[in-house]
Amino acid sequence: DKVYCPYRQVLLSALWPAAAVEVHTSREVDAVNGTNLRLKCTFSSSSPISQHLSVTWNFQSEDLSSHEPVFYYLKEPYKLSAGRFKERVTWDGNIERNDVSIVIWNLQPTDNGTFTCQVKNPPDVDGTIGEVRLRVVQKVHFSEIHFLAVAIGSACVLMIIVVTVVIICRHHRKKVQAKKIEIREEKEASPLED
Image (tube, rainbow, N blue to C red):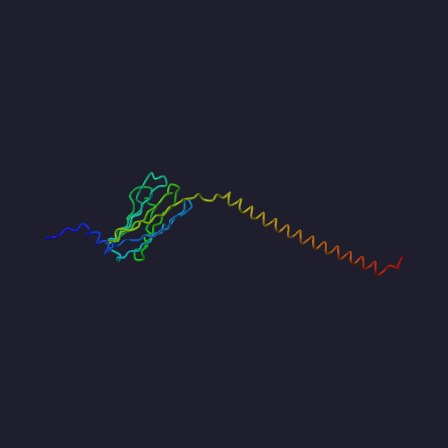
């Protein structure tokens, strides 16, 4: 009695498109070695926030040698029991505000790579996966800061010296001209005294 229609699923998908979660992250982030960084991730969903909403953060190293979990959330945050991010990641999100961000503590050069943020909000389980490419840069060394301060300070001192010399020269020139005018006036006033 039932007729098989091979295009039934396609028709249903076209008439009722599957809901999807959209995930939003910064594309690239630079951070200083040894500091802490908030990796921001937000989402939007066509469905209300579900009790079964889950968040998965993963990491792919820059050299593509490892793919490892960073963080997981399902009703509550779960800490990692092993791996490079154990004891270094904390939850900093707010599900009611569609924020599923985390904080990574004490960044290391080995943290260079791509972090992915995936949100599933049943029935919205498909959608985009947010990616953040992290580049950990070395701290600016004191010698570089010291050199910069000395260069800027020297330039300022040099400018002050030049301005002071110009002012003194102008003042001296005005004094000399005033004296010449005074001498000339004295000579003009008393030519008969000889």
